[in-house]
Length: 230
Image 1: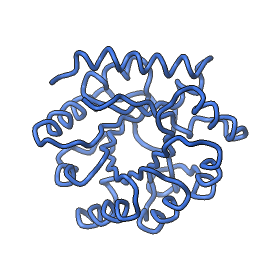
Image 2: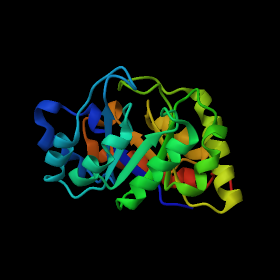
Image 3: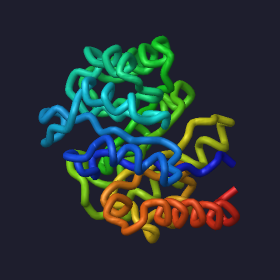
């Protein structure tokens, strides 16, 4: 059983107080910092680029979990590595098919980062199965990517369960990360299905005490770990 981790999503932070928000995340006991990179083309929103990631890197030692929701990830992998990324996740829906996806994963690893692969709520798990032995992280999107504050899509739980079973059956070690609409209630469902990284945004940043909220998720993870399917 992999350790259960909490990764606050910077997209939900107060951008006018970015340094303070990043420091609050670290001081509250988070494991990773999740950074959503959006270009307005692959998803209908724009967030931030390598310059902001580099600036944030100067204010925390947390591992950076960077998700590229952009139309041309190959052109920016190097820039995000230099900016301080520790993990870079690309989408299986990226244009170019299997060869393109495999090339992106290889480039991420060759540059010294952990490589992740994300799939949208409507994308079947079968589409990522050819790559499971080549990734360090599988990101199951539990909302449609692009905006924070959306509601968790319950139908994605079955996908987490299938990924967990496949990981165990094949003796693989990739982490299963879930992102979107994470609250204690939805986190419980995801953890029970086999997820081991929780990306939490709106609920976490709007909590009165982030440290207490992170402990709540971590305690929940400990309880669910005892009952997750084996």
